[in-house]
Image (cartoon, rainbow, N blue to C red; front, top):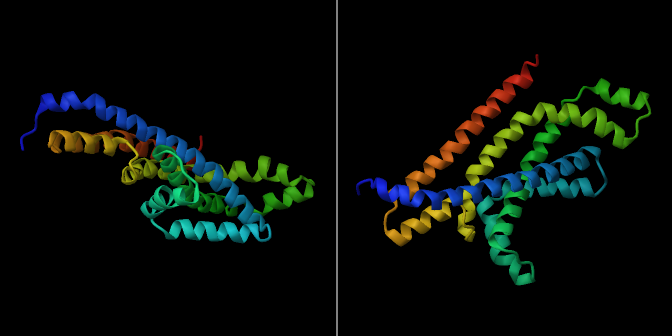
Length: 218
């Protein structure tokens, strides 16, 4: 099969639509992962009875099962018990919750890195639990883990292609649709790979630069 530049130019706008869907999945999914992961990490670290153990099981379960299996379960099994959403919403929620287990561990590492003296100072100043976490612990913990969270953002962008298995029409879905309708897969799959690279490589470079900046503040 020979590369057809005119065909590539023809399908590029359609594939860019798929790229936009992938970006939306990544941004919304990462927002879910950051919020849920932070909540899980704080509750686990605080040692709230029963709930902290449930969240520990949640983290172990999510990290111990493949994202694809979780996506299949949410899309094909949950509707049988009356829980059903569109493929896109299902995919966003699944990938967001999946990554929340990983961000929770990142947050936990950041919280543990806060010096003991900081906790003691909070106690000496009689700060409330909210003030302790909001103004002392979390600002320091989150600053240290921003590069790791950025790496997960890049990883989520690439893993979003898995959601094509549950009919989420993202970048890979658009490329597959072009290939199945035209019987030409060289151009759509190549362009899809290049579009993934065009986003993930600059994002990874920015994460690296951010890591260096945070590691050596001016």
